Image (cartoon, rainbow, N blue to C red; front, side, top):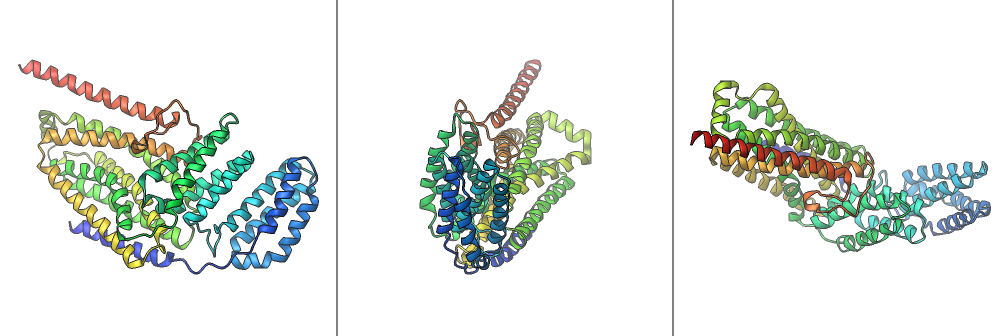
Length: 482
């Protein structure tokens, strides 16, 4: 309990510093870019029809020279990005390359639309849920115009920017959060195939409709408390099963290894949170977070598959007693203790990263005192749940404990595999291909993609084989004893 209180206090202290630094300063007023967008729209329309866009682009550059300093004063980031986009468009026009010019013009227009939507502010690129909805609207307009190249680029940008707003969404509706994440991957997949592009339009419309009611919601203390509770429960199940097993084996060393892996993961999460808050922006960290979640999810799933198998095998009391007697004080080998520490580290890292980023995203949208109180309550409830799990786990008879633990671990293995591969698709590591033939159950991390369904099916098959094999051996054993 003393160690748990120390960890909780450290987490709250670090997050308090993050939130204080992350409170937004007053945003500078943006320059009206409507005239510039008008010039670019005419230039893009001319290029799409095979005509010269020189006059319209020249008009845009005149606007840029007049407003460059004002734009730079409101946001240095967007000024730098616009200068780069204009240089690329000018070079392609000079080289008389209409296709590349069209692509560069669309990129330039997207930067201006992002700036107009409020996605650039101060020294970082900041997103609010309302500005993210505007971004969705821009993608929908591109789809309505059948400008599929721009729509594809916008959807991929939406995937990267999702991290900036997902804390706002998950604190209010887990269902909308999971559905939105799924839709982002499916839109990318549909847009990649000319035959399915039209299917992306209802998905972006669905996201806009579902997110709008959440855009102007007021946050309270319990909204902040629910973040660590919701994100931490699955990691707590893993750590609780490992610690209870270590206590049943009377292995103090194993418990120290598990706690070491847990504490190291918490430290890494807090360090990443500090880095994002002080050095980067949440948006800039988007694809990296998806990559970390994806890799950690797949690795944790594979490790849980082995742990679940091992727990199920030792549900037999005689086998367990033989195991303890043969190993004496070294009931759990050093290699297995290290693997337990690694599993605890990965499980906490996966959930802790999202918790920290979610809470940073909520900073400035509610009073700091309410936010800190909510975090304290959330981690306090997690501590109580963890304490009860350990006490109940030790009190359970050996066979029910191992059976329940193995089923929980296999369930987490199945879920982590699906969500991990889904995150890798969000990060762009795996193709975002989907199939209408496949089911979609977001609560179980089942997504309509062969990339996630096949590994999950393999995990489920292994679980069934293990259960049937152990059941068959148990029947044979009882038959011999009879």
